[in-house]
Amino acid sequence: MSTTTKLVPTPGQTVGPFYGYALPYEKDNELLAPGSPGSLRLQGTVYDGAGETIPDAILEIWQPDADGRIVQRTGSLVRDGYTFTGWGRGAVGHSGVYTFTTVNPGPTGPGAAQFISVAVFARGLMNRLFTRVYLPENEEALAQDPLLSSLDPERRKTLIARRDPDGGLTWDIRLQGDGETVFLDFR
Image 1 (cartoon, rainbow, N blue to C red):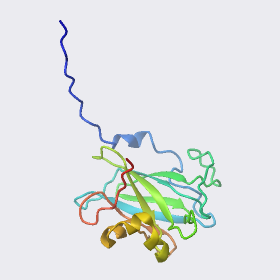
Image 2 (cartoon, one colour; image 1 turned 90 degrees about the vertical axis):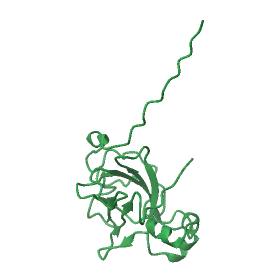
Image 3 (cartoon, rainbow, N blue to C red; image 1 turned 120 degrees about the horizontal axis):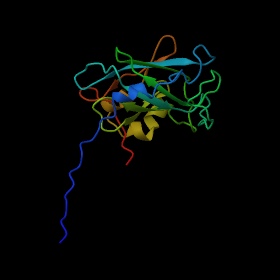
Image 4 (spheres, rainbow, N blue to C red; image 1 turned 135 degrees about the horizontal axis):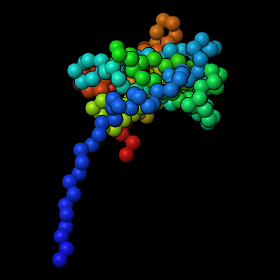
């Protein structure tokens, strides 16, 4: 006689904050060396649903170079200070602030809106979240972007960075609540 055992699923694990011990590496948030020609700072704050800063998230960014070329060089984990690889990972500090040294991504095609792809890893998340940060200048390209044009104007604003007086970009991420950042589902 055969007996059937019903297995009970184990609870899911969140994506953090345990990852902070193994994932950071030297110059992980520098896609090129600070002060390099064309370099700029991308910075912002990560907030939870209650509007409190999240002190231990990790962000990853992917982007084309300043000419809009998708970089296909190796070396993302070994920064030489010269090679732009188009990928970076940065830990959010205790104040909830992140920063990357990168370049303005060029458009990947004629009339395309310029953006940086972002993945967010944080405590309480069962899976990483994907989103984009768009450069604010080219309003015509932003209006024609397939993702942005599919959103209502208030939601669209959550994906567009502010240009700082020094040429850098500031873009805050809100995981839930008022002004929640638009996140993408790639199913």
